[in-house]
Length: 581
Image 1 (cartoon, one colour):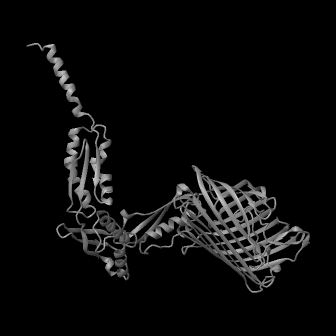
Image 2 (image 1 turned 180 degrees about the vertical axis):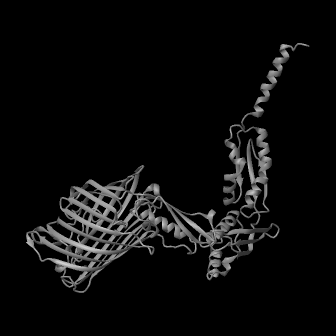
Image 3 (image 1 turned 90 degrees about the vertical axis):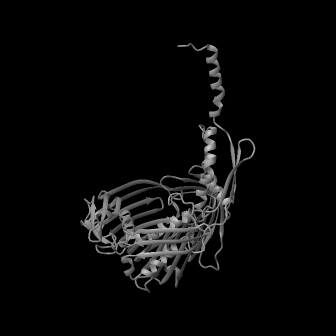
């Protein structure tokens, strides 16, 4: 066997080393000449664009990608309705490629046929449901064809059926006839609704401590009612809001439909039957305090909730009792409340007893309450005892909480409205009507630059004699969530011995801008204005300006503020936890 000469081996190695750069990474640039929307699509999805960051890409692979680029770009453009586009890749300069696109005309939809077949056609609301499908359809006649709209429209069409009575609905024919020559398209979708499905039996697991009726009573549907996904979601929400359960999963078992009925599966995790709450509190306006609460969730073995709460502060002491009844299938719950309260605020000492019975309905973001309340008060203003007052009230309250995040609001609104009236002179020292409303708005058009908070509070009492109205039904202002920079409830009517008493009208407002400075932290700049008075004619705004710190804690927003009152020029600080209400 002949021996290889060393010089020949060296030459072969040199040749291999010289050829190595052919497989080295290539650097190149690409520009796209196309209408803006199409250029964005191509830049986001073409391999010729994304491969620039591939460290293993060599020139052979690049040439293969360039060759495939026109067909790949054509496929992307067809999803936007451009079926006759002309595409080419040109090399201009060293390693710079230009993708030139002549998009042509888009395909326009000139006919849409949507058909709902099956038992749904026998439903009394068939025409309304067909109209809803047409309204949800995103590709009407005259619109340019887009693959995303075609797919999303079919999903929306099917979803409208599956969430309400026909969960087994399916598309049996889906056809898009596109004519690239005429730039026209015809769409056809046929849906088979399947049978009308009803709720079957409800199977509850995890229920041990409380009567089964507590869980079953929260559902506003019964076996045999037509299936609706919303009713399942409402049922889960009602169980989650119940004080008896800490975890809930509600689902319809579509794999076990029998005789056109779907069983409902409910998995529960229960809270213990009783809860003891012991706590120390601190209020920037009232100093330290103590809070002791006890709840029992299964009174008389019926799932009724009994509660006792002692809230003891320097100038505000409250002992309250409550009896709550589980929510009924119609969405309403009921409660009975009573309390004994002593306060000493701004020179006004009050001892009050109240009791009430309430009918409550919570649904989605809204809480509505109706009730009858009796209030009896004994009041001392300064060193002057006043007459006892009492009132028997018919009351209505309505609260709507619609914010993006209850713990970290950036957008949305909070609104609370209440209206109450004495029942003539029955058990009341005078007849009166009380109206009250407050609202908060959060607006963050550019969240990283901050949030604008606005707040407005309005209230009025119409009474024959305001001296005979219980003080808790009159108005004072000042302090947190009111006019900061003024002492708590220090804005009102002057009383004897320097006391401040309530007036018939109140109005306060806030304009605040919260500027993020770190994660979960923000600086707040604000202006507050407001007052309480005997009438709107004598009403005079008091103003305050301030700066604050906001911490979006895992528990609730924490606010710490320092404000200067324009009335006396003093600086005062406030601290509050949670939303305005």
